[in-house]
Image 1 (cartoon, rainbow, N blue to C red):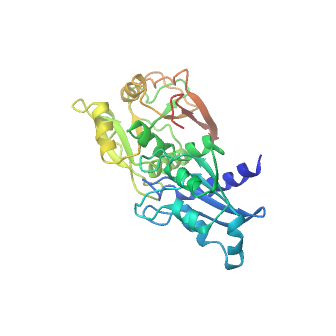
Image 2: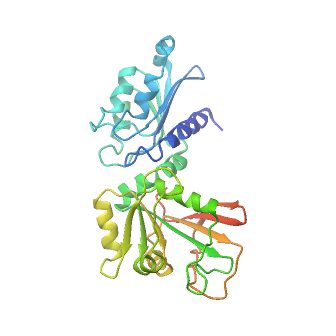
Image 3: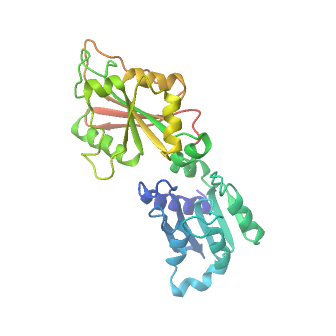
Length: 310
């Protein structure tokens, strides 16, 4: 691991603390290094408040301020160059007089999109771009999907028996354990909206909230015959919804898969078998396995789309 990668990984660790309080802003971490020592670090804590770079500079002690002229600042996302709820971070970096800036990935939001990097270089600052780029884009996959695809980041989620049924003889049945249910509610707290099909809503009457976790419940969306997937996604994007969990049923999942409108799959499998019922959809052959974890007797697998922006 190179020195730049080491400090960029620290940026990512810091950035992760901003989930979910920064949304709809991206999660960003910043680390200031001089003489191979971290002299300041910070992350974007909450939407509308100071950005990561501001918090990092604020954490530099008076005793270390004289080192800024020889310092490198690592930032997981390109510093902003426009006036929003806060002043441009690119201007602050220039003002502080650091020698070098290392950027994890370019911010493709139209108000930034390379302008921050250009401003820094025009000021004579050395800028390195693309250190741990893949990891930095993955950190903000919701943000990038929303800005580049003009739709929410879509997670298809279901639980199934070991022989591939999502219910028992077409009757709702508990497949998740209390612990994996808690994990599912944690996931809900991290996303903006949650969608089910009309049949699932009427038959199962799911609450779709975060009663087993802290945080805000996602917006509830029911897909009916009167509303198409395209229209629903367009409406959600227009209202700034950056991420969407699709919890079923199987026909709804298949409709999203058929249109290749998915970014991530979360499949929980329990060691039980049913004689009949509703078949779970098949994981696409080109889905990329991200992780496989055991929680008691159940297994949760996560996949990403080969077409994912991150």
